[in-house]
Length: 476
Image (cartoon, rainbow, N blue to C red; front, side, top):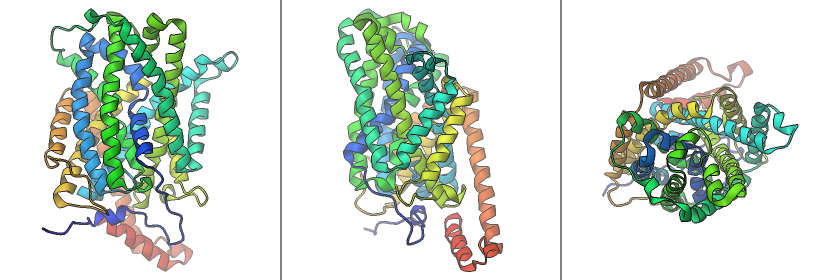
């Protein structure tokens, strides 16, 4: 049997910092990663999307969760395979880069980050609105963008101060937002009307497509927690265990929430198409205190999702910056806290801009197709990494049917993508084209620096040569 292969791209994805530069800390274990995976998936969607999905396909809404749930299981198994083989920061960017080279890696990472900026920006905007609605005057009259800026800045500051603090915050947020939902399901099941759950025909494609992309967006997000690859302890063991614990639990949780809300409200769910439908459902069997509890739960859930994104996505910007494909400053590590502080600050600013200029519904719709395409690339990368037996360190995760699982996931993703409208597909195509353009421009700049030397102006030719050689190795 041939020896395992270490892809020439993989070492290039590992930090190329000077010897004295601080390194990232491996502080995320199974418990923290499982909480991060659950936190990323149980976000704003569990409150905002049940009504909208029911508005699209009525009482057949649980069908959309079942179809997308099977796909997510295949996808997450594929990501577990890839994450156990390429245990560096960057998540989808690192997986695709190790399997297919830097061009595909960058385009995938760019689409991933862009989709998260849009979706999380929409969630942060909703969170700012709920925050204002819960406060007394005159605080309630403060513009939404002010609360948006305060929330994003506070979460960025927490994550800059250390990965342990950010991971702990994610654990606390996960527990805090799950408790109101558990109460909702436990008490609400006693008020479910079976006739409200009956459906007699398969939903029409024109309605099923939007419902699938909304549910898929709601169930996705676990890859955010995998971006901190260099901060995960024993990733070949930790990543698969966390995914196997988190993904089935999240899927069952979503089905229970949708079934309870729909069984209580029935056709009335369509009236709450673009709002938190769980609050009026809780009012039926818990009264006004129940509605307040689920409103607070929605705010905590959104806060948890944004905090989880602030922990994970900046690590992808950090990884891309180390390759010279975005400004090098994004790869700086804070000398005291040992976190990518510039990447965190930049990502926070992008989230604020998206939230201040867009709406939750539109941002989610536009990001959904990009997420599906990104998953397809990651699943193909998982298959290629498995086939070539690429690994960085310990024995990787290899479930039964490892060679088949990624292709099952890709087949399901292609079917979901085929149900989408031209606008969403066009957005994904434009994002990919923009990523390819940025890559080629940065690649041209690196080769120009090879000719003239970036350190020549400062009289540092040896530093210039080292800088260029690192990038030419990656961009070859």
